[in-house]
Image (tube, rainbow, N blue to C red):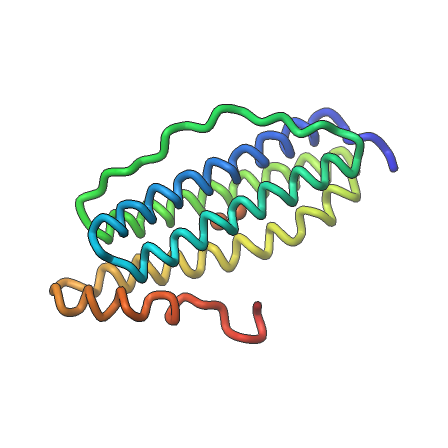
Length: 170
Ligand SMILES: [Fe+2]
Ligand SMILES: [Fe+2]
């Protein structure tokens, strides 16, 4: 196995920490929802936090498999205050957009350096971001449509079902 080229290594370490930051950020969204008794959204975001930690673990495993010690950085404090659920959904949407940019940057470095293992590794994440952007877009749209208290409760009860990937995707 060839060593990880330095520019790719920089990108993989950066993205690993970004995924951990995303887990931290989703935890903050889950807590906001818990506090507002939006139990469905809270469960959904707690689950997302777990998935982001799994993403970080994939990066750590890839680096370890290639003989590199992953380096953990301090994580920025996530945003925890929001005026309403639309803002929460928009925050998730902007995080995922930024994450897609990061994944693409890492992939471009891998292409440039002809690092084939990193390219194949990142394919999964490129596809994952298509799905992450799709559900955040849908969540923003559904939250924006909900402008009465009854509608919000209804949306909260069904959000996990709405945004769950269909059988053939998962
Ligand atoms: Fe992720
Ligand atoms: Fe994500």
